[in-house]
Length: 114
Length: 112
Image (cartoon, rainbow over the protein chains, first blue to last red):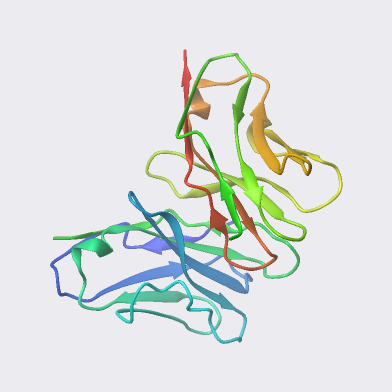
Protein backbone atom coordinates (compact mmCIF):
# COMPACT_ATOMS: atom_id res chain seq x y z
CA UNK A 1 0.00 0.00 0.00
CA UNK A 2 0.97 3.65 -0.21
CA UNK A 3 3.42 4.94 2.34
CA UNK A 4 3.86 8.38 3.82
CA UNK A 5 4.41 11.00 1.15
CA UNK A 6 5.85 14.48 1.47
CA UNK A 7 6.04 17.43 -0.85
CA UNK A 8 8.02 19.13 -2.12
CA UNK A 9 11.06 16.89 -2.00
CA UNK A 10 13.33 19.91 -2.19
CA UNK A 11 12.69 23.56 -1.42
CA UNK A 12 15.07 26.45 -1.78
CA UNK A 13 13.89 29.74 -0.38
CA UNK A 14 15.27 33.12 0.47
CA UNK A 15 15.77 34.21 4.04
CA UNK A 16 12.64 35.90 5.35
CA UNK A 17 10.19 34.07 3.10
CA UNK A 18 7.47 31.74 4.38
CA UNK A 19 7.37 28.07 3.36
CA UNK A 20 4.79 25.31 3.61
CA UNK A 21 5.70 21.63 3.74
CA UNK A 22 3.08 18.97 3.17
CA UNK A 23 2.68 15.47 4.57
CA UNK A 24 0.22 12.77 3.50
CA UNK A 25 0.18 10.03 6.12
CA UNK A 26 -0.72 6.41 5.60
CA UNK A 27 -4.48 6.08 5.30
CA UNK A 28 -6.10 5.24 8.61
CA UNK A 29 -3.15 6.29 10.74
CA UNK A 30 -4.36 8.52 13.54
CA UNK A 31 -0.99 9.70 14.79
CA UNK A 32 1.22 12.07 12.78
CA UNK A 33 4.64 13.42 13.72
CA UNK A 34 7.01 16.03 12.33
CA UNK A 35 10.76 15.75 12.92
CA UNK A 36 13.72 17.75 11.73
CA UNK A 37 17.06 16.25 10.74
CA UNK A 38 20.04 18.56 10.64
CA UNK A 39 23.79 18.03 10.78
CA UNK A 40 24.34 19.73 14.06
CA UNK A 41 21.21 18.62 15.88
CA UNK A 42 20.54 15.10 14.68
CA UNK A 43 16.90 14.04 14.60
CA UNK A 44 14.62 16.21 16.71
CA UNK A 45 10.90 16.11 17.35
CA UNK A 46 8.84 19.12 16.32
CA UNK A 47 5.11 18.46 16.71
CA UNK A 48 2.73 15.53 17.18
CA UNK A 49 -0.94 15.04 16.30
CA UNK A 50 -3.04 12.22 17.74
CA UNK A 51 -6.61 11.91 16.54
CA UNK A 52 -8.73 14.88 17.56
CA UNK A 53 -6.59 15.78 20.56
CA UNK A 54 -4.75 19.07 20.81
CA UNK A 55 -1.34 18.71 19.19
CA UNK A 56 1.83 18.40 21.23
CA UNK A 57 3.84 21.43 20.12
CA UNK A 58 6.58 21.07 22.69
CA UNK A 59 9.31 20.51 20.11
CA UNK A 60 8.71 23.57 17.96
CA UNK A 61 11.88 25.68 18.12
CA UNK A 62 10.19 29.07 17.81
CA UNK A 63 6.83 30.73 17.18
CA UNK A 64 7.78 30.98 13.51
CA UNK A 65 6.93 27.30 13.24
CA UNK A 66 3.36 26.03 13.16
CA UNK A 67 1.51 23.02 11.83
CA UNK A 68 -2.03 21.95 11.20
CA UNK A 69 -3.72 18.72 10.33
CA UNK A 70 -6.93 18.91 8.36
CA UNK A 71 -9.61 16.24 8.56
CA UNK A 72 -7.35 14.01 10.58
CA UNK A 73 -5.24 13.31 7.52
CA UNK A 74 -2.97 15.70 5.59
CA UNK A 75 -0.69 17.94 7.60
CA UNK A 76 1.09 21.16 6.68
CA UNK A 77 4.15 22.48 8.48
CA UNK A 78 4.59 26.22 8.02
CA UNK A 79 7.76 28.14 8.71
CA UNK A 80 7.40 31.90 8.66
CA UNK A 81 10.23 34.35 8.03
CA UNK A 82 12.69 31.56 7.35
CA UNK A 83 16.22 31.80 8.69
CA UNK A 84 19.36 30.05 7.52
CA UNK A 85 19.36 27.85 10.63
CA UNK A 86 16.03 26.43 9.46
CA UNK A 87 17.87 24.61 6.67
CA UNK A 88 17.38 20.91 7.33
CA UNK A 89 15.47 17.85 6.19
CA UNK A 90 11.93 17.84 7.55
CA UNK A 91 10.57 14.35 8.08
CA UNK A 92 6.97 13.35 8.62
CA UNK A 93 5.90 10.05 10.16
CA UNK A 94 2.60 8.37 10.94
CA UNK A 95 1.50 5.45 13.06
CA UNK A 96 -1.72 3.64 13.75
CA UNK A 97 -1.93 5.28 17.13
CA UNK A 98 -3.00 2.27 19.12
CA UNK A 99 -0.67 0.13 21.14
CA UNK A 100 3.06 0.41 20.77
CA UNK A 101 3.41 0.84 17.06
CA UNK A 102 6.29 1.76 14.88
CA UNK A 103 6.25 5.03 13.03
CA UNK A 104 6.47 5.06 9.26
CA UNK A 105 8.49 7.87 7.78
CA UNK A 106 8.15 9.78 4.56
CA UNK A 107 11.15 10.59 2.34
CA UNK A 108 11.45 14.08 3.77
CA UNK A 109 11.61 17.62 2.41
CA UNK A 110 15.06 19.15 2.12
CA UNK A 111 14.77 22.85 2.93
CA UNK A 112 17.58 25.21 2.03
CA UNK A 113 17.36 28.82 3.13
CA UNK A 114 19.73 31.11 1.25
CA UNK B 1 17.31 12.78 31.59
CA UNK B 2 15.90 9.92 29.58
CA UNK B 3 17.88 9.16 26.47
CA UNK B 4 19.46 6.63 24.18
CA UNK B 5 23.12 6.74 23.29
CA UNK B 6 24.99 5.39 20.31
CA UNK B 7 28.64 5.48 21.35
CA UNK B 8 30.07 4.95 17.88
CA UNK B 9 29.79 7.50 15.09
CA UNK B 10 31.16 5.03 12.54
CA UNK B 11 31.40 1.26 12.31
CA UNK B 12 33.39 -0.47 9.58
CA UNK B 13 33.01 -4.16 8.88
CA UNK B 14 34.07 -6.49 6.08
CA UNK B 15 31.38 -8.09 3.98
CA UNK B 16 30.42 -11.50 5.35
CA UNK B 17 31.55 -10.68 8.87
CA UNK B 18 29.12 -10.22 11.75
CA UNK B 19 28.17 -6.66 12.58
CA UNK B 20 27.13 -4.95 15.79
CA UNK B 21 25.82 -1.41 16.17
CA UNK B 22 25.66 -0.38 19.80
CA UNK B 23 22.88 1.38 21.70
CA UNK B 24 22.46 1.99 25.40
CA UNK B 25 19.48 3.53 27.08
CA UNK B 26 18.72 5.55 30.14
CA UNK B 27 14.96 5.33 30.47
CA UNK B 28 12.83 4.95 33.57
CA UNK B 29 10.18 2.29 33.64
CA UNK B 30 9.80 -0.13 30.77
CA UNK B 31 11.48 1.21 27.65
CA UNK B 32 10.07 0.77 24.19
CA UNK B 33 13.12 0.58 21.95
CA UNK B 34 13.42 0.79 18.19
CA UNK B 35 15.99 0.58 15.44
CA UNK B 36 15.63 2.52 12.21
CA UNK B 37 17.86 2.61 9.13
CA UNK B 38 18.35 5.49 6.73
CA UNK B 39 19.74 4.88 3.27
CA UNK B 40 21.22 7.83 1.35
CA UNK B 41 18.61 10.43 0.41
CA UNK B 42 15.83 8.32 1.87
CA UNK B 43 13.57 8.55 4.88
CA UNK B 44 13.91 6.32 7.90
CA UNK B 45 12.87 2.70 7.62
CA UNK B 46 11.74 0.66 10.61
CA UNK B 47 13.88 -2.39 11.36
CA UNK B 48 12.64 -3.79 14.65
CA UNK B 49 11.27 -2.97 18.08
CA UNK B 50 11.35 -4.26 21.62
CA UNK B 51 8.24 -3.86 23.73
CA UNK B 52 8.25 -6.78 26.13
CA UNK B 53 8.80 -10.52 26.16
CA UNK B 54 11.64 -12.32 24.44
CA UNK B 55 14.86 -10.34 24.76
CA UNK B 56 15.99 -11.29 21.25
CA UNK B 57 14.03 -9.42 18.64
CA UNK B 58 14.21 -10.28 14.95
CA UNK B 59 13.53 -7.69 12.31
CA UNK B 60 13.81 -6.83 8.65
CA UNK B 61 16.72 -7.69 6.34
CA UNK B 62 18.13 -10.31 8.71
CA UNK B 63 18.79 -7.88 11.55
CA UNK B 64 18.18 -8.70 15.19
CA UNK B 65 18.67 -6.92 18.49
CA UNK B 66 19.07 -8.11 22.04
CA UNK B 67 17.49 -6.27 24.93
CA UNK B 68 19.79 -6.52 27.95
CA UNK B 69 18.27 -5.01 31.05
CA UNK B 70 21.30 -5.45 33.28
CA UNK B 71 23.54 -3.64 30.80
CA UNK B 72 20.78 -1.25 29.65
CA UNK B 73 21.68 -2.05 26.08
CA UNK B 74 19.85 -2.79 22.85
CA UNK B 75 22.58 -3.60 20.34
CA UNK B 76 21.72 -4.24 16.71
CA UNK B 77 23.32 -7.30 15.14
CA UNK B 78 23.52 -9.23 11.92
CA UNK B 79 25.42 -12.49 11.46
CA UNK B 80 26.78 -11.72 8.00
CA UNK B 81 27.05 -8.15 6.70
CA UNK B 82 26.26 -7.15 3.12
CA UNK B 83 27.60 -4.15 1.25
CA UNK B 84 23.98 -3.07 0.84
CA UNK B 85 23.68 -2.77 4.64
CA UNK B 86 25.85 0.36 4.48
CA UNK B 87 23.65 3.12 5.85
CA UNK B 88 22.94 5.32 8.86
CA UNK B 89 21.38 3.50 11.81
CA UNK B 90 19.36 5.11 14.57
CA UNK B 91 18.36 3.72 17.92
CA UNK B 92 15.27 5.32 19.45
CA UNK B 93 12.80 5.00 22.28
CA UNK B 94 9.38 6.25 23.22
CA UNK B 95 6.75 5.75 25.88
CA UNK B 96 3.99 4.39 23.70
CA UNK B 97 2.42 6.45 20.97
CA UNK B 98 4.58 9.44 21.67
CA UNK B 99 7.38 11.11 19.71
CA UNK B 100 10.51 9.09 19.24
CA UNK B 101 13.71 10.20 20.93
CA UNK B 102 16.65 9.27 18.74
CA UNK B 103 20.28 8.56 19.31
CA UNK B 104 22.71 10.56 17.21
CA UNK B 105 23.09 7.76 14.69
CA UNK B 106 25.86 5.38 13.66
CA UNK B 107 27.15 5.20 10.13
CA UNK B 108 27.79 1.61 9.07
CA UNK B 109 30.18 0.94 6.24
CA UNK B 110 30.43 -2.60 4.90
CA UNK B 111 33.52 -3.10 2.79
CA UNK B 112 33.63 -5.66 0.02
